[in-house]
Image (cartoon, rainbow, N blue to C red):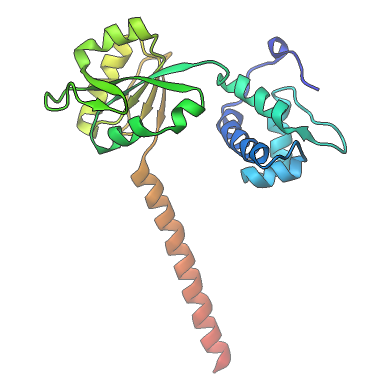
Length: 229
């Protein structure tokens, strides 16, 4: 059973952040031919506690069926609709260095409701190049891209020193959602949403956990040597 979307209240940001993980898990289940799933099974696949998953999904008005669980396809549709993935979102990538090239060639965008419609850069040596079927355009054409292609999301893949300027240009052109790969914090006005993807930060967090595991293993080794004396 699911409630009328118009009757739902706002969904907490923490819940929204977990919805893509639930959708990923459901997609994997569907690909394996699984048509229904319990909250415990779905929670394990998404890496969360089952109680948290049930609370998150209750914000969508989805409560599952006792003894049956959730219908995989229906729940995936509910989450996709809530995330806005049942419609097409035009995306522009700014910065055609190595990262920009990789993002432009990433096929996963199209399969998840995002359509890359423009590639932009300031480097004259890159302008006019064809990358993944698109021609690199100068930033001066950004406003035209927004007006003609209905640009919804801007992806910044520039060096940190250029990111704020690019962000300002995107905002001035009317873009209100930005995905930032540059290792810096962007300042934006109210009404503009920014998500940051900092690969070096994630690696540093992993390094912290690796160090903790190494120290714990070293401590156990020392303890074992003391016990065996």
